[in-house]
Length: 365
Ligand SMILES: Nc1ncnc2c1ncn2[C@@H]1O[C@H](COP(=O)(O)OP(=O)(O)O)[C@@H](O)[C@H]1O
Ligand SMILES: [Mg+2]
Image (tube, rainbow, N blue to C red; front, top):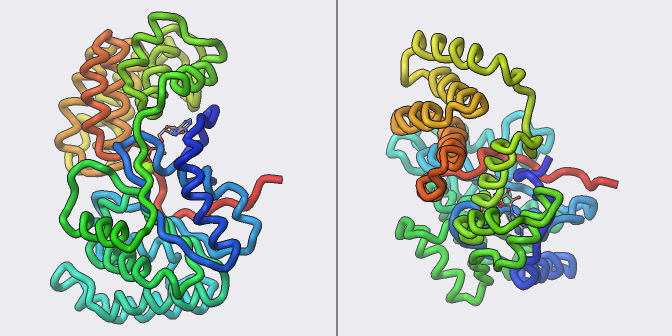
C-alpha cells in the first residue's frame, strides 16, 4: 500500500516530476541526489514523490519512507528509524543490530529530550552500509515535524550525498518553520541540491481533476465553488466529496457505514458512549470523530460542525484530529459555509492521516 491514496487521475506537475525523476535516474546510473519538495498542506507533495518513485519497487532498491508528525517531533530519531526500518525484530541483521545499539543508549537519549551524537552515528553508519549494498531511497515525509536528531541525520546524509548511492528526499511545508528546518533547507540549496516548490494547480488541471472525480465536466456553479480551493488538490477533493454527498451521489471513497435511516440512531449511541468516556482518553477522540461523521452523513451539518469544532482543541490523537478537521470542513461546505471550510482546511495540521514507517509496495503487474 502506498503511503498516500492515489488520486482518481494524476494531473500534470510535469516539471516538478522531471526534477524528482532526474534523481531516480541518477540513482539508476549509480549516482545520487537530494531533493526537497515543499508546498502548503494538501498541495500534493507526498503524491508527487509516490508518482516519481512509481516503477522503482522492482529494481531491488532499498526503499524507506518515514512520516513525521507532531508526535515524532518529540521522539528523538523515531522518524529516521521508521524510514530505515530499524527494529529489534527486523529480519535484516544490520537493522536489528542498529536497533539494539540505539536501545542501549535510550536512557541517555530520553533524559535530555535529545539524541546523543552516537545515536546519530549509529543511523549514519547504517545508512552508509545500506547504500554500499544497494541503491537506496530515503523519504522523510513532512520533515517540518522531524525531531532535531532526525533532521541532523538528513542534513549529514545530504552533505555527503556524493559518496553515497542514495536518493534522499524530504517533503516539507512551506509555511514558516523551525530555524533548524530552515538551516537544513538552506544548506541543501547552497550545495546545489534540488528544491521543488509546489504551487496551486492551474485552472485546466483543476477542471481535469474535478472531471475525473465526478465522471463529467464541472458545471458553472461547481467551477465557482472549486475556485475557492485555490488550486489545492486536497481541498478540491474534500469539496467535491462534500458536494457529491449533498447531491446523494455515491461518494468517492465512502467506507462501510450505517444505512441512511439508521444514522440518527447511530449518532445518538455514539454521543452517549462518548459522553461516558473521559475526554483526554484516546477513545474519546475516536468516538467524537465518529459522532461528527455520523451527524454529517445524517445531514445535521450544523451540529456536526459544532461537535467537531468544540472537540478539536482538546483532541490529543493527531490522526483523529485530522479526521475531525476534514469532517468539520465538509460540514461547513454542506451547510453552505465554504469560506469557513477553506479556513478550516488551512488550519488542519495533517491533511491525510497515514501509518508511519510504511515500505513502498511491490510493483503491480
Ligand atoms: N497532481 C495531482 N493530480 C491529482 N491529484 C493530486 C495531485 N497531487 C495531489 N493530489 C491529491 O491531492 C491530495 C493531497 O495530496 P498530498 O500528496 O497528500 O498532499 P501533501 O503531501 O502536500 O499534503 C491527495 O488526495 C492526492 O491524491
Ligand atoms: Mg504529505
